[in-house]
Length: 120
Image (cartoon, rainbow, N blue to C red):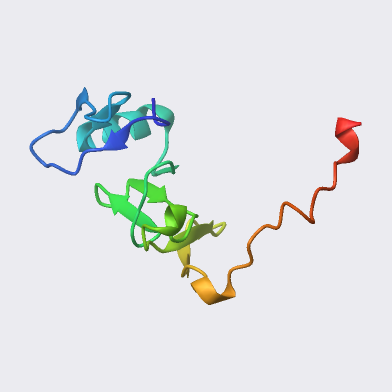
């Protein structure tokens, strides 16, 4: 259940416990190590969890969370990231800042009401 579950950075909690969000679980380093070993992985790359720096590594780099929406909901002030993985496994994080408010273009629904062909 990686979609709705989140890593638990608490070193004392190593396996699973219920999430305070009401769905999914928190999972620890032992659960990640067992999953990676069973599936012959070295790293899990996931999303669906806000990271203020655009990404966050857990458990000595065996789990990585990527967040690609800068300034989420126009109020979180977070960075965004894209992870590039080379053929040799080398990882590079491309970090993006939010667009400054004065450069944002609002969607004008009054003048932009084009109906795509697939709805006709």
